[in-house]
Amino acid sequence: MKIAFLGLRNSFDYFHIGGTESLVRRLSTNLISKGIKVEHLLYGEPMLDELNEAGIKLKYLKSLEDTLRLLETEKYDHVIAIYLMPKDRLKYAQFRRRSESSNKFHFIYFSWPDSLFKRKLYFNEARLFPYNGKLFCISKRQNEYVSKWAKNAVYILPPVPENYFLKPEGKPINERIKIAFLGRIDPGKGINEIIDIFNALKDDDKFECSIYGIHIPEHRESFEIHNFLKNQKEINYIEVDRQRYSPEVEEMTINVLKNTDILILPYKKLSSTIDTPLTLLEAMASLCVVITKTFGNIPDIYGESKFLVNPKGFVQDTIKLLKNVAYEDLLEERKRIYEQNMILDFKASSVAKKFLEALNSW
Image (cartoon, rainbow, N blue to C red; front, side, top):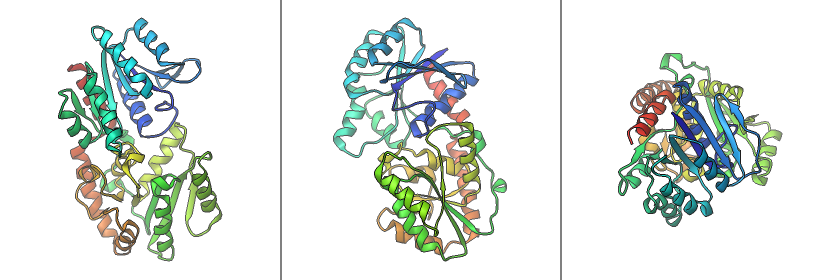
């Protein structure tokens, strides 16, 4: 079997780290382990040499037209679209219709646009121009929405590699409660709320607070907050280069989460990430207690917990929650998360198996 993942270069790339990229890379490597050939067709930039990373062949193409010519000449059993430029979608729909007899075409939904208009545009493309394969949804609300008009919707969670997963007895017991933020130094990701929370806890010896920050130099606000954090002494700030994927970066993330008791994810809105946040799942796999907001389907994923906080008054409610937390509460929550992980079963091998079964059933 030969599979192609197709998308705009900037929307997914083996070398970058983000929800979309990680999901596609992890699916790809697990499919390859089953003897399946996987290629990433990345269009939208000047032609580059083909690359091969961990068995994934990366083909760089200048335009969608070049990509469609490749799809006509090379035989792929399944073509899975990730993201296409709006101006390219009609052209791709027409190509899919012409090529239905020779290829199975699928799509993966990653986001849930805040605007109702943009949401309809995002989902209704497949309604107006049906795919002859599957429509993969990574959140419950996506799946419920698509299932109203499509019989080919499939719900899969973003995959997390097996080496993230811990059992309760394998999680370190720390002298002080280690609280962390791991992510982009970006107001949209809630970094200002993190700073307010950590400043409120700085004199409490019960806690050890750390920010593992990824900043984007081109983003002015991100760069300014990064410089502020570098020059202050109250909060432990560790600069993280997580923009490019490498096994070393993955290992660093695993170690940070393994040794973190509480991870705070203060999203301003869920549309700033994929609709089931990958960091949430990675933290759960590592048995981190997660403090986050009750957006979207996060309560369904994380389960019933006092650590889910209403977006209104998030900072003050989180400070109050933390000042009253005991280590015994965290140990109890770890057991609950472990049981929730068993129910959800989002290990990369399990997700890849479900993904492959869905491809083969259509």
